[in-house]
Image (tube, rainbow, N blue to C red):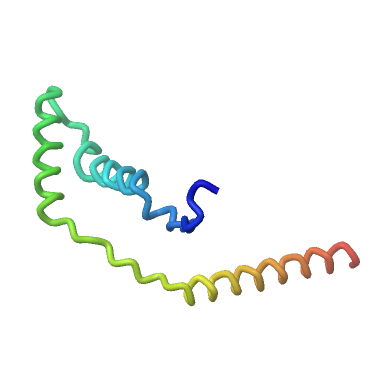
Length: 95
C-alpha cells in the first residue's frame, strides 16, 4: 500500500467545493440574473460584480452541526422506514 496511514474520510456531499460553487451561482441566478431586464451585457456584468462584492462582505462561514450520533439516528430511522415499507409490500402481496 502506498500510504498505509491514510484514512478515507467521506465528507457531506452538500459541503463539497463543487456544491458550494453551485449554491453561489444559484443565489446569483435568483437574486441578480432572474429579472433579466438588462439593456446590454455590460449592465449585467456590473450587477454581477456588485453582487459579488456584497455577497463576499456579508457571507458567514458555515458551522457544521450534524454529529455522528445524528447520522446514527438518521440511519436507524431510514432502516425502520425501509423495513416498514418492505413489510407493507409483503403484506399486500399475500393479501
